[in-house]
Length: 527
Ligand SMILES: [Zn+2]
Image 1 (cartoon, rainbow, N blue to C red):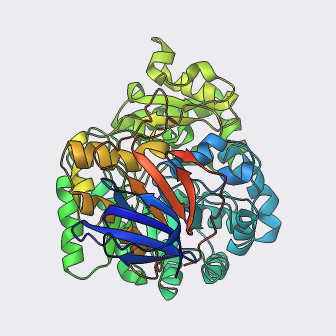
Image 2: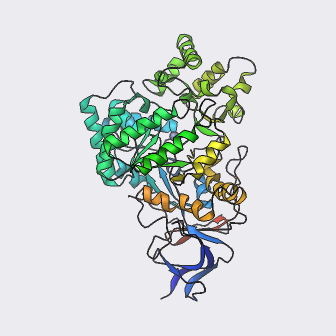
Image 3: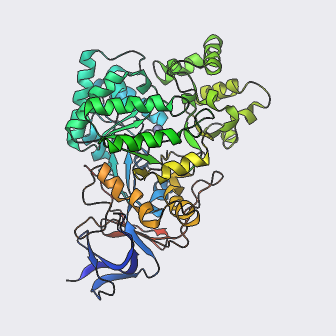
């Protein structure tokens, strides 16, 4: 039989964690075949991979790429993960997505999403609508989506700070059930973000129970990743135990000066839970800086009622003073990023109407004045939507999480047009392979690849992906382990990586010698 493609003589790193070995890999009809080295198999195209690693395509388990491909612009943002070897993205993280909602709430959520995702990207009643919109846009790699709890809550209750009634909770459960049945990959929460933060534990238990019935995970941005991270982790464990859902902790970190070093407690806790039989995993990105919305620096009540209500409050001096006091004094149950770090650790990443602020810290911009007023003025002038980079972690914590055997890799990238985003969107996977694996020796190559492939596919139910075995889907990346490294920096966050030679999606070459081709074989994955 003539193969479509033969990747010849590479070092096979198969995604299972098994020691690398020399082998040929054949592609035919979008599926893989593992062949002995020097198989001499006949193929329409032969890639010589001698001296290069051949791995399953990387799966980015944590993205906020829900909208970028739908915007029509932002080509360099859509391309960045593809040239880094990412063949599947999982969006809908941190409780935020572009579905589902009651039909009458769709216009309001579409307007909010347009602010949050950097343009009018659309909004859908369920996963099927979202999937159809993505399927209509040619793309190089695959995409899957979680159901975001914050979006779901806003889609039933609106963006309000109150508990859900039993009827509202039943409606949320039924919308979630429908989207999961249609192929959404699980349930995500962002319990530091409004409106997710307005939900109590019982509400999330009920929803996670729906995910459990579908055999899909509960994926959570914990209610606190700073001084109260351990309590927040226990809440997630309680939700998993009471609902029966598998637990996946998003971008695990212990950020802010009071929590530095706390991974020495959270990771042994996770290991113990696993030993006791709880199905718990996490993901991590390889940087000591985080990135999020500037509005998340404000107490949760500031956003009660949505973005319009937030901007009204920012314009009111009395309300501003209340926010300033909340940041200074703290509010029980609220992760206070500024109180845990300071405005000198928070840099503006994206403020489209004020590009001169991008790359500078809020403290610098205040130039001796009150940084809170600088932040509030900027948010007001940008109508509520400013992205920040927060230099809130220490290296030891990042390394400990990366090394945890159940930790997989997720970029947490937030691609939207303009600004100076966090380099993690373009740099995460090559940085783990280059800096942390080759240069620091924190991981061996097989372990690093497994964290990007097999482990991720298993957690998110992507059957036949993440491993190179006979019959698996033909998503591959060929890279040079001796030179692979990230190119993206905080100053130039979209620079491409080095050493990623070839990327194959569904049996088609989408990256050749580091350059994107015209092939667009990407699909919407429905685990
Ligand atoms: Zn998050």
